[in-house]
Length: 243
Image 1 (tube, rainbow, N blue to C red):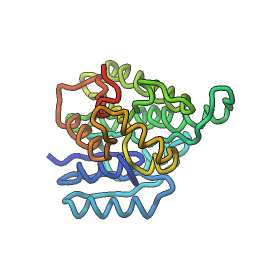
Image 2 (image 1 turned 90 degrees about the vertical axis):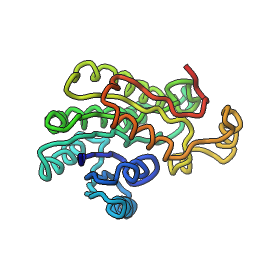
Image 3 (image 1 turned 135 degrees about the vertical axis):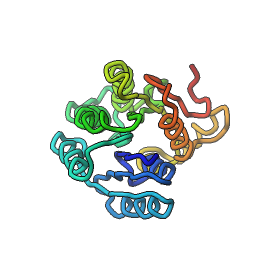
Image 4 (image 1 turned 120 degrees about the horizontal axis):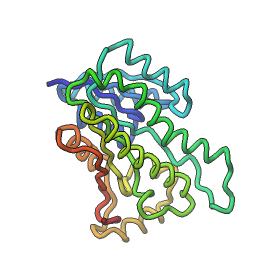
């Protein structure tokens, strides 16, 4: 059965690969903020892979942007089957000795508040969906600590807690899970990590490699298709973190 899917931050990296991975037979809202051309390219890929795609722009670090995105979806449909809260970013590395209040607000707004707000606004759509589910994209940074990225790690920890809370609150109608990626080679690390850091993480991984976006997309697809999974966070990191 065809699914209506919203993927936030779907223009590059994990979000883009997830859109491609879920494309066949489905309709996907490809959200982006500033990367319009990249989002349009993803939409073309979705269409070529047998799906339908609708690029939608919004700045989800603001309440107005979250409202605008969901309003645009309401204008196109009266239901939603899958919400993937993928939009996020580190914004800036900063030592705990140098914390700035504004940066803390910006990082939490982008990584945590956006997912919370979009989720809340999408509930009326999801309640009308077919086996509706929400998938939040967390990070290994919440697991083992992330020196100079501790605000980011904390924002992802908050998202993980949010996942478990609403998994209970929205059951049995809507399932809620999360995926916690390890080091994934994507534009995220092009911006925030040096080649030396990536090499060190690779060498420290039991599998002696870093991941690719499709590794996360595979886990997301598994959650979408498994109707007995709820309140779980799947770690996909090659063994960098083990429970």
